[in-house]
Length: 115
Picture 1 (tube, one colour):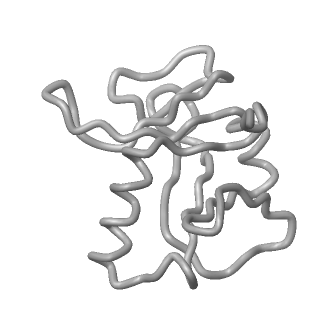
Picture 2: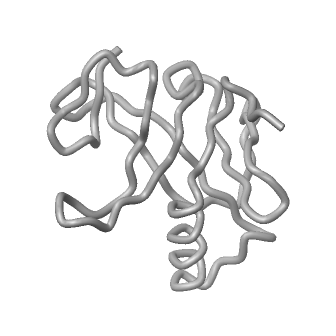
């Protein structure tokens, strides 16, 4: 089955790390979700946000499955449509990476982008 190309998705490696962090923070995937978003700032103009949340807001878009839910507000979704959340623990850097097909350019650290 093909994934929805407009959805925000997560790789297996990122899913594993999110579950590990949820466990460390003592929050459960049954009561909390991962909130992804965009805010103004950063060296390229827009910065990614990633956090745990347990309150849905009006207009939130939901992605994921029964084991891990991701949520994004509608404004951020306009910038993140089709994005994949990945995690790298290699020598060239460690952390979450947003693979965003909408980004025209990104900064060197990968935490901000421009459209």
